[in-house]
Amino acid sequence: MSTSSPYDNLPDAHGFFGEFGGQFVPPEMKQVMDEISVAYQEIRQRKDFQEELAYLLADYVGRPSPIFYARRLSEKLGGARIYLKREDLNHTGAHKINHCLGEALLAKFMNKTKVIAETGAGQHGVALATACALVGIPCEIHMGTVDIAKEHPNVTKMKILGATLIPVTRGTATLKDAVDSAFDEYLKDPHNFIYAIGSVVGPHPFPGMVRDFQSVVGREAREQFLERYSKLPNYIAACVGGGSNAMGIFTAFLNDESVKLIGVEPAGEGLDTKRHAATMTLGKPGQIHGMACYVLEDDEGNPLPVHSIASGLDYPGSGPQHSYLKDLGRVEYASADDTECLDAFMMLSRVEGIIPALESAHAVAWAIREAPKLSQEQSILVNLSGRGDKDADYVAEKLGLN
Ligand SMILES: *Cc1c(COP(=O)(O)O)cnc(C)c1O
Image 1 (cartoon, rainbow, N blue to C red):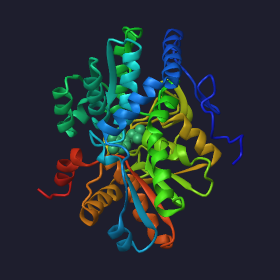
Image 2: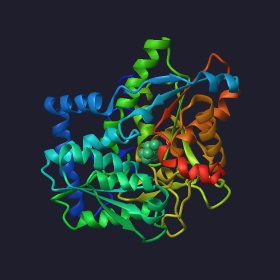
Image 3: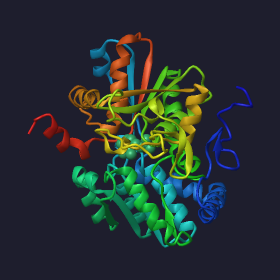
Image 4: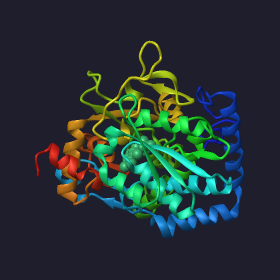
């Protein structure tokens, strides 16, 4: 293996992945971000922190999550073997608990008085409220009213867990607006508050830090796959909203050139409509929420309204490391539309008895589309980022199953 891999030791000291990332924030905010960065660099070296995080990931989250061979699905499709990395089995039902525990422990270490965050589908909110309850820190979650209506069970859970919920009505009342609202609150007292970003996005150090916390997924998957099958998968597919579950599973495989990495974006109602959130596929380099990355924006540089059937994927930006990996050609970005996502949701439920999150169903949809084109010797590992309990009622109504 080359010692000068373009994929290692990123971001650089200024938080850049090539030309992407950085800290495009006011000077006061830059100082606060630098404090978080210094604290993170300190904490991550400490044995007590590493041991506590490892203990919680094992006995609280339930890691390692298994890899499951989806035999019936693979045989039905008649091509590549499809495997699932079961992040849906984690406590709270998705991959997000992995980085929320890290962020809550960091907040505790920095003596912060309040943890603030946005949430889309409510998954980050629930995971963060859970981690804050466990660690013992007040938690405030900002959420668009459109998402609140759609994801009611998660809203109830956040309240039960003791979080303060702030409904956001501005703009399209979805994820991007919740980010803006949470950021405004954070700016009121950034020295005592901490903003726990829900993905590999935002100013440095968040993209690298959240990736580090999530990279346990890929480390486990690589070891599990090698141990059981004595080889690596040919393809790894993960859905991409901000990009944390994808970076989580991709990171351990970046230097394995034989493994093709596929990020699956939401094509919504179609790439030829204005109703999608396919940032890597159709966006261009720009800036959003304090970072440089691919962005879906208008000619004046304002973020475009985006749409996906999966609330957790409708974001007009994407992690800077994804932007970097796209330009290097290391990760290929594909997409699946709302209809394919629903079909995949139902197929996985009925053929394997696993109800996936609508977000994760995008990666499953890609596997369903591509597997028949490949031989049975080939394998696709899908990161099943979360479970679909939160989406069950919505899908049942949409498909007239009630
Ligand atoms: C939030 C969420 C996503 C999207 O976030 P990424 O940062 O792109 O991973 C994907 N799947 C599930 C289940 C989620 O809750």
